[in-house]
Image 1 (cartoon, helix red, strand yellow):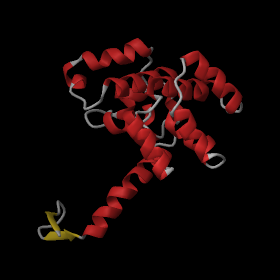
Image 2 (cartoon, rainbow, N blue to C red; image 1 turned 90 degrees about the vertical axis):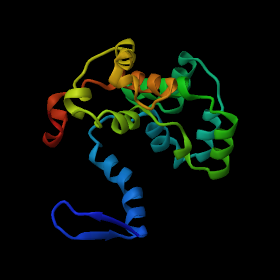
Image 3 (tube, rainbow, N blue to C red; image 1 turned 180 degrees about the vertical axis):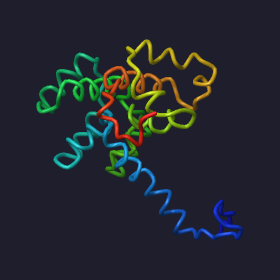
Length: 192
């Protein structure tokens, strides 16, 4: 058992392994629900639009090599109801992250779970941007193009973020399409 001191009381409290596991697994779900106001990233768009109807389609796409223009044409036909930003987001995500490595493709085929796909731009922003500064003032209201977003990784405090070059490109592409958000679209508890 893990023991920790409570900040509100003088006595220790005990967290059981099951409580820790619940907190670990529920955390992303709770965070995702709390961040629903942020546009979905490429992985989420794929899962939400394809997994229920054709789980094999995600594996097929993840094994595909295509240019940005080819991905755009493919998704325009495959997911015709996507809006412009969602279409650009999933197109960029696929062009940057696909094809998956043979190991990741094997895991995807073995498990059938699309969650093995690389993190998308929204996930990368949530995981990295609010550790040091406000998500609102440090990310959600910034208006940059892809080059501008990539440029933030040149500063000493951002260069240390544990992100691969592919993740930085995924984040930057997503952010250039989906940021800034309008002030009124951000819940009050996330402003400033």
